[in-house]
Amino acid sequence: MRTLWLPVVFLSACACYGQSLLLGVKGGVRLTDDITGDATSESKRYAVGPMVELQLPFGLGVEFDALYRREGYYSSSDIELPTYASERANSWEFPMLLKYRLAFPLVKPYVVAGYAPRVMSGSINGISETCNAFTQVCTPSPYHTGADWNATHGLVVGGGVQVGFRSLRLSPEIRYTRWNSGAIGVLQAIGFQSTQNQLDVLLGIAWKMH
Image (tube, rainbow, N blue to C red):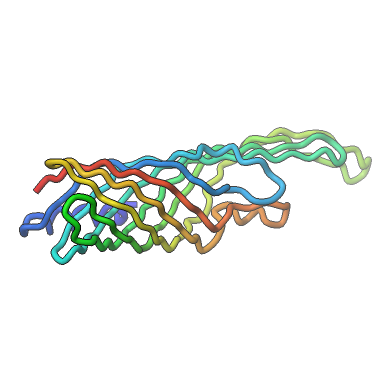
């Protein structure tokens, strides 16, 4: 996890050499579903977290975000006995983006592209079915287990506009992420998984530091 913060150190160091450093927050909503198949998503659609951007000459820039999401699902079955699984997890995405801005005076359109690792951890509560091999009698069995899903990785593209007033910078943006696999892909065999396509509408609010 420590290595995910290395871009912050890099951007801070570069800012000492005459570049513009922006510090702020980025947040927004997910437009696409995050679960596909035989489960009901109970995730929150919002995303929020800190951002830092180094503005370079020639309209170039480098941005690093840390976006938090609250993820969850509910799945049930009534084939023989009522069973269910309910998960709650914290998801963190760490997009590292290259940015290109057009040199317009007031409103600066821009495009971004980059890479985003994602980590997710939480817990699952539920009731499973336990059957006796000799009597063939099945009984419900409650359980609680951790849900430390494997890290996933995404490719990110997007675009938006940046509006400035004094040192304040506002950046509405639309962003698409294609994940290499679903974070909950281990559950494909029982009918559902995380989606790999993610579309967000985001707003960055930042302050020019240098």
